[in-house]
Length: 102
Image (cartoon, rainbow, N blue to C red; front, top):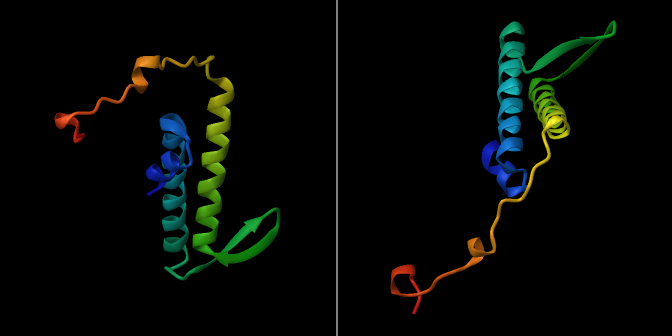
């Protein structure tokens, strides 16, 4: 689902890979939190000396989005300059019996 969502949003293949990485990290973290909490849905997250009880799925989705956004931005910034390799001939649409046309 995350892979197709990336294409729908126009993220491209490279950004979609980072969406999948974020998904994997979120799933792994969510499973770990659930197992560490004897599979109860509320996990007490300790941040800076404060304990925040919250729904594990929310923590996982936030982690998923955070990882995907940070990695996408990081690799887009560090990527070499990309050029468009699309040629005008790539946009030609042929019709005919073989292509389902009339």
